Image: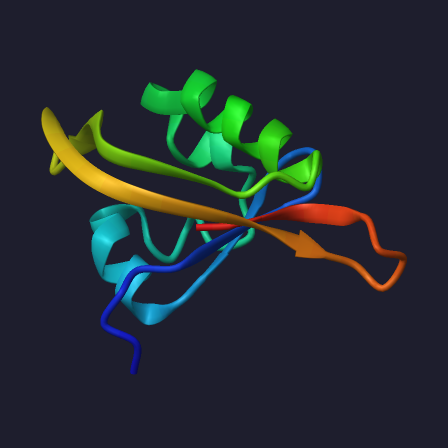
Amino acid sequence: MASTPMVMMVGEEGILIYNDAYARFAGQRHPAIFGMPVRQAWPEIAEFNSLNVERGLSGESWLLRDQELVLNRHGQLESGWMDLHYSPIMGDDGLSMGALC
């Protein structure tokens, strides 16, 4: 079992597909958010995620260090800082179909 949370945001809606470590990170949102558009799954950071889906679809790789995100965890907004590494997910046609974080 992977210890690092990993999530794929697929297509223009950023459909979430993730591993068990990300399920633990998602907390009470799991399993409802599996297969859900990222903006709907994490509405408090919808704009942030929209930009990252767009970057992934453009084929870009990028790193965000010490990124502050204010997330609704257990019914309360909590600030957290994390390093986020993004890579494009390339389709058979050579075009990016999303991002892996």
